[in-house]
Amino acid sequence: MHIEKMFFQCFVLVSLLIMAPFTAFCYDLSGSLDVNENADTAVLAKEKAISVARKSIMYNVVSKYTNTSQLHELLQNTPSSDLIDLVKSSSITNERFSTTDYTATITMDFDTDVLKNWLSNNGIQNWIPSNEMTDVFTTVVNMENKLYDWAELKEICRSANIDVDVKSIKGTTVLLNLPYRSRTRFTVNTSNAGWHYKDKNGTLYIWK
Image (cartoon, rainbow, N blue to C red; front, top):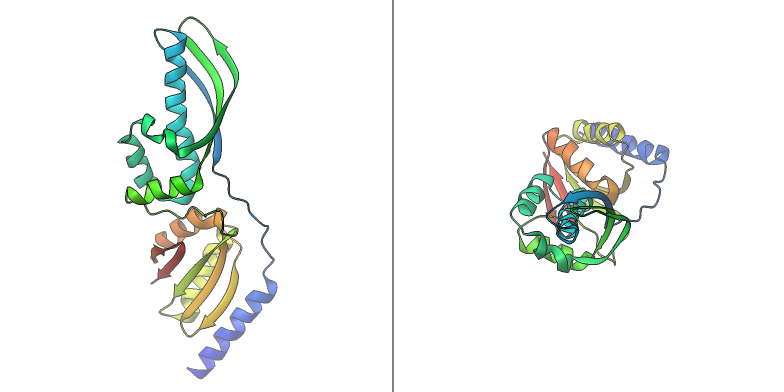
């Protein structure tokens, strides 16, 4: 056991030395959509286009920070008008009208805190960073087999191009910092490999 512990510590030390620092990431809760809708009048077509864009842009933006199947189901059962208060700002460019058609590019920026509260109130686990958070999230890893599980995690991150910053190692527990942009990818890949996960106040816990 003593030899295994020494080997594991050396393995982690080497890993730390060869890891390249990750590039800083600024999260973005805005998106754009090209729309082309028709209705009885151009005014109604525009209203329809904005309604469609609101849901589509929100899904594209928020799916990076939450469970996509839960988000899809929630948006399916939520009227687009109920999402208006989640939008901080919006703009429309490249507008074209005809008697019954409307074409444009619609851009929307969502309010971070309002969006987080809305998702939480609807029972949707999310890891949208607040304005006070940095570009990384913390992951607490609890391992059964230190050597095997750590090697598996390293391979998962390597295959998914996820940069890892090891903050501490205590027994079978490892504390990691990972880029927010990789959170969904990391969660899905570890889950597919048999790891369990839970989010608690923005910190991700994973275990075998």
